[in-house]
Length: 568
Picture 1 (cartoon, rainbow, N blue to C red):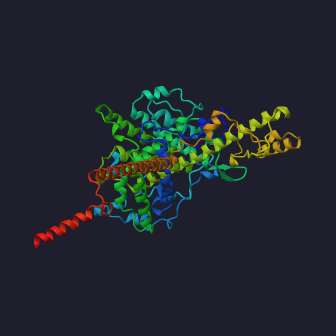
Picture 2 (cartoon, rainbow, N blue to C red):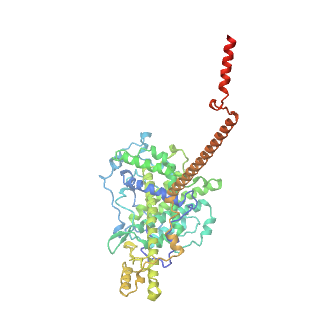
Picture 3 (cartoon, one colour):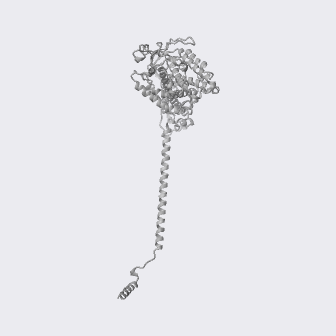
């Protein structure tokens, strides 16, 4: 749903604050922005494949319901507003009208609960009005062939829808949507309301931000007929309003928590058989459940409605959300009505899981419609976060181009003798068309791609080589722009480097210690041997050799003679 058509980009200057991704903890959650980006990078490829399967790409919806609140013409004349209905032969046999009319609801066995559950069984737990899949009033739509994107739907009809949502159903929390300032002057009043009411508003605001991002990311360029990413649209609707971007992360974190709580149910749920890709569906669902279960809880739903006085507020919370689901029938654009109803139903299913059931998966009662809506809104929110990365990168690139262009203009205004011309610096040509096909620069300038290159060539021909030099502005902003030391993606590398450094230092210290100890042991052993030799030498008397004692021989002879004589 689009609130308005393309507008010129706000003339308010952008800064690095507008091109930097948020950091820290998302308000009212247990999730950090950095964690959200890392987890979403793992989730999006799996969700991309899941929503293309038979089970999750066909959605039955009644787009002919009348608006209950005001007279609304449903005959949208815009070509891109129409929705292509899936043919009866295209959908699985068990979903067709003939199969549904043959179901015996009286004698139906409990084991068949994997198919469809009538909504009247648990109306008290629903957060939105569901289009009963068992009725013949709805029609199946292939969501892949009817993507959510810009349709041109705008004006009074769209404004009335969002006005009814914010002004009549978001309690008394002030709305930042509709104000075009970069700050929220009523933020103090918003912080003073209770958590439950603030959470309700943040959910609606986050979903609104996600829808706006989808429109900007899939924008029809009527001049070329191509679908482009409209940077000007993103800046006007999201970048200049940081609170809208934060609310997008908030509703994503709440949805992650709901899917994480639902993970045991999803692992054991026998999705519709006979579709031909049951194993593929099971594999993707199990992978999603594994990823969301691998991270800590992103949202603590138990802090809400915990006290007795807030039980009545819980019913109001549910009633207001149901009312918003009814307002979706008042959307004048058929395709916008399709995606509005589906995403509100998906978010309502997430709230139903969080606030209507405990932690026992056996208690959950969810229809196929609810599961399809939940996974599709999860995919839409995940795509929005990825689109934010792309848009923020383009804003940063455009800011760099504008600063370099300003530097060249300043340099060309100076005398040639006053401009430094280092010989080692080569001329560089800038591509000023970083906005893609949007045809707008960040500041709303209408400079054409290649103007910077032409200016450089002109400076070359006039003999002023400094004018076409790509001299960076060494400002604090530029330094911070190119600093990636605190990029969360580098944390693992940093940790690995620190561990290797510490282990290497310990090893070097150990070798040095062993070398010193061995040297001391050898020295002590040598001193001990020397003392032992000295003691041995002192204890042994000097004995003269036979050759050096001339009197020894006569004495022996005399003794021998004497003994002989005595014997005789």
